[in-house]
Length: 119
Image (tube, rainbow, N blue to C red):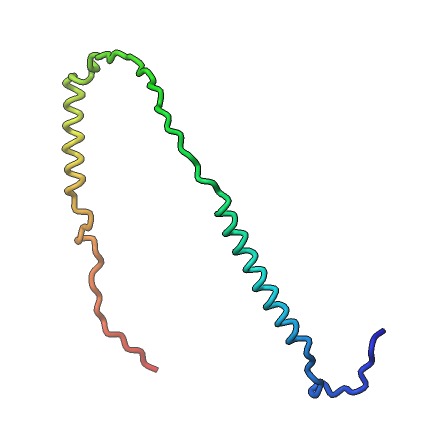
């Protein structure tokens, strides 16, 4: 059954004790919950029995025998044309590394002009 408020002076409504008791109840309940959680964690660590390690020696596995086959080098390894190309590539690489990439001659000229605007 809803109650009707006849006095509409909301600034003078008395503050009830409901908020205080709710706060106290929530504090007590939270503290108990934290204690129970801490006890559960503590007991779970205590239940674990120390595990006895059984020392077993690893069984030796035989290593596969393989013969290293020495294959002759490629016929191109001693080819004069291939060796000449390798030397040219090395010299070109050195030229690229030592090239000046800034090229100061391509910079635009410095323009220092005083510009004044008149009204």
